[in-house]
Image (cartoon, rainbow, N blue to C red):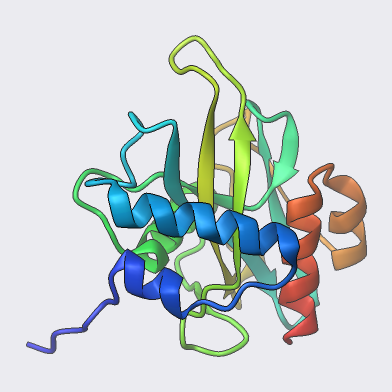
Length: 186
């Protein structure tokens, strides 16, 4: 059996090089969280780690966004780790597969699973949870089968868009930055 060594969250965060003042500040907060919190993935912590992914179809140059009802916005796919999960790349991949039905996802543009963006986002309160923050670790995945994408549920449609359409459709400046990074690196 081949055993893959996954870097710890702290190792991943300390080897990551941020870009810009906002990301430097967000990364400092996430590093502090990872260094002081026994379980930085726990939803019981007001600032907790999540993992997400931008999905691209390189052959057409399109990107897949998902409607997030709670945020009332078109965003990348992703979310919380399940109990016991600690590998951000694996969490982002699981969430991407669950939310889109795509099963052929691979890291893009290189296969190394590179962390592409670290951002803290505010999440509004709902009936189950108070307002809180996600320390979102973002990756980029590619698919060869865009027509296989399907929504996880009826109120969470997915849409293939050109980068320009995605940039214009999202109201989130942090996702616009993720889009820039994804397509600047390709």
